[in-house]
Image 1 (cartoon, one colour):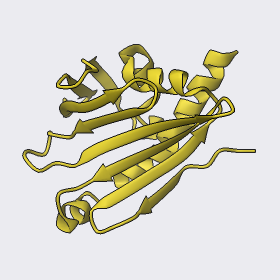
Image 2 (cartoon, rainbow, N blue to C red; image 1 turned 90 degrees about the vertical axis):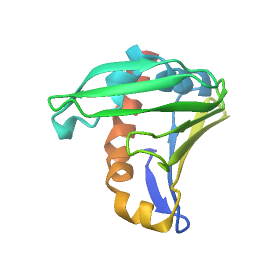
Image 3 (spheres, rainbow, N blue to C red; image 1 turned 180 degrees about the vertical axis):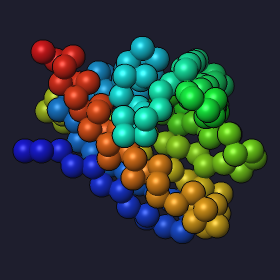
Image 4 (cartoon, rainbow, N blue to C red; image 1 turned 120 degrees about the vertical axis):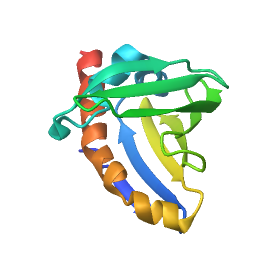
Length: 154
């Protein structure tokens, strides 16, 4: 059965992206927290961009910074919660104060992992302004993660 990614606006301030991966939570969590793995799947190939750098200090209070080529745009923030193999929470600070907070949970059942990504914006207007573009890109991004996990298993 093919795994599908769903993107749903669940409230005025929250967007939820869900997908099941055919890999244990430990492996999926590592793909989110090890830069050498993260850079292989996170950026949608259709965007024609690449990551110039990916720094991750995955611990409570640690920071991350992703810099893109060719334009030098950067995403950065701080990890608020790190529960190995089950939960990550971080801020998105590139837009200034009041950026969204992202929570990713990893729930393993029978060797498969249900991943749920919540993006909580400070206001309805902030979510409206962000649109669903980034979340929609997660469909492609999560397919790339699926490919990475499949290649890692073989």
